[in-house]
Length: 418
Image (tube, rainbow, N blue to C red; front, top):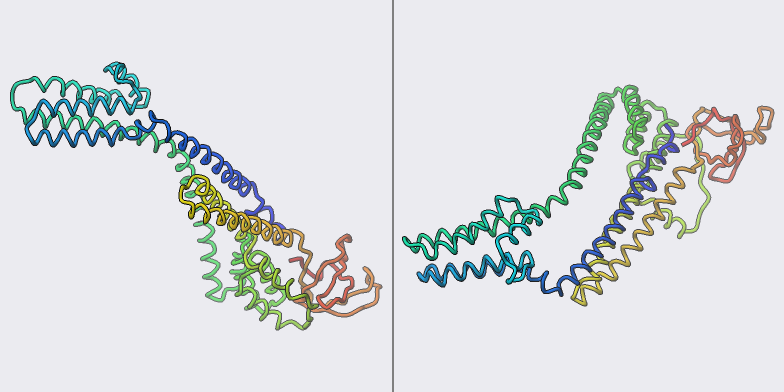
């Protein structure tokens, strides 16, 4: 399988890549709207009271507990009732004049609170109003009312939190399912690779090459091409080893191990052709582009976009001026990195998809001046030499260019495209 077939399987510029990018932008829009809405909501007294309802009720119940320890039943029951009625009035935004058991039951059910929890809250109010005038153990009655009141408020808050968490449960389950599927597929591929590596370790190189080939048919990988190149090298098939190393280098340009082994393999070829020199800044730029692979640059771009989203949100809604300045410049830096990541990934993919290089497979090949066997021999090249195809229009012959500038025509069967 040639590397030219892998571009359709690349993560960069795939549907998944664009979907994730769109989701990040959508996430920014949604969170911006939500935070803006909350910023306006903080100025709304009613909503603020609803958010503070639990804290206010807790403070009142603490005061009631103090009154209970001081054995002041009348004051205790008054404070407990104020805590219960005040809590539900603030939480449900019901004016004091409209507070009733029927209204409370209806509004709690509308908020997703079940009948059981609603009944317990109403019972806590009834218990507080009834027991204050009941004879018997005053301390025991106060303890009973206090416990019921705390339990009722805690259960309503618990139900409210469950509703919030439930909204995020489905996306989490979908993500978990995807991860499980991905890990299962990875386990199968990893198992086959382990078998191939074991065959290589046991010096069964031909068997290892066959298994590596099966893996590459399913999922082209720089690591697998690298291992296959090592197996070919052990079999002294230098041209095939160079072809595998070159394909690995296309998929993982920054891999130093691949570059080193490719250099070692090239040292065993007959032709030693020095490439034409290029300007130093061009070399630096190519080194930067090739520092990571296509998909690695794509992941860098997405992470940079995600960080830019977070930084912009902090910038828009933070109160600290220093933090706003930091996140402003951070967001600009991340957006620049996002653009560069896409640019470098695009350039690498362009090289990967549109590359026109090949490796000579025959031991000795005569390069002709015309695409015909009757043409004159211009020069001779040997197995393992890398050439650039400059004319791909003919089916049997290709015009090639060597790194030193020489060119000519070679039969297709004498070489294999990277």
